[in-house]
Image 1 (spheres, helix red, strand yellow):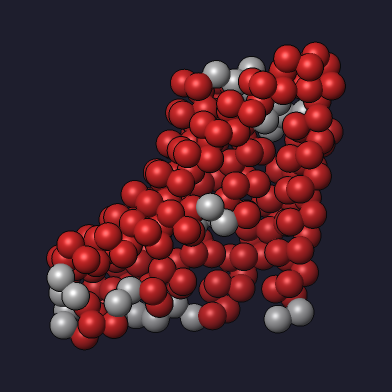
Image 2 (cartoon, rainbow, N blue to C red):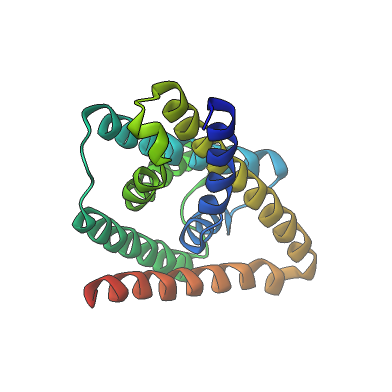
Length: 203
């Protein structure tokens, strides 16, 4: 597999990963509630995606260089952590209608994006093409990991802009249109977070 093919495969897999329900629920929880224009939706989504991509690249690149394996227990506990975080975010959105004040968008979006990447580290490492690892093709591995992160960020930005557009459309319906998205997003985040935790407890 050459570097270009590895990069393309990484980007496609990153797009798929980025549109996972937990990522979308977390990003929607960050976007809902406060006044939302296209620029703010883009900023939050981009920071969430970049934080996610950085954590994935850091851990997977390090593990690949030293030949370390990520144990299944890491993935299980990271998913439980992500589920608890998502549950907490959903509760706050249900109670307050929003997760935070607009002035705290940037750091929280980056940190939360990074936190949700922890459960994907093992999956990304396992998805690295075996031929690249066997040949120690570090250029191909780097291309795959970096474009995977780019795919995740692309997916997050696309989802964030679409969500922002839908939010703006809902605002035309007055108080109901402003409150309903928070109720739906918060409720979904709570239920998905509980499922994530429960599913890993019985695994």
